[in-house]
Length: 80
Image (cartoon, rainbow, N blue to C red; front, side):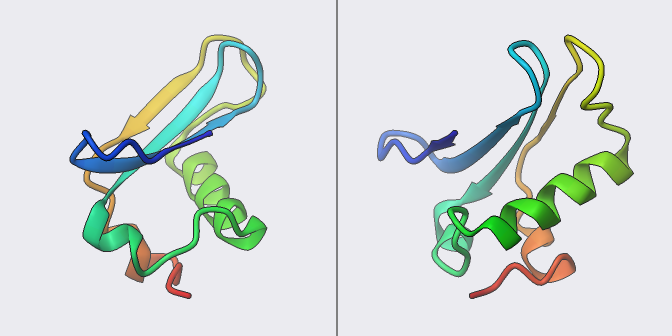
């Protein structure tokens, strides 16, 4: 789920592995202009990063959030 509400200061991507487990990453609006969160390759890179960071997607109620993640754009090569 991508949340792009204009009233918020950031754009967030929430990736669910079950009803209760998710990883959420937030980008600034400026950073979001350089990436496309709708592309499968972009999502795949973010998911792999979350798993490497310790998100256990196979367990129920495993929730991880990352705010101000603009640094991931360069680190994961997410630019369009």
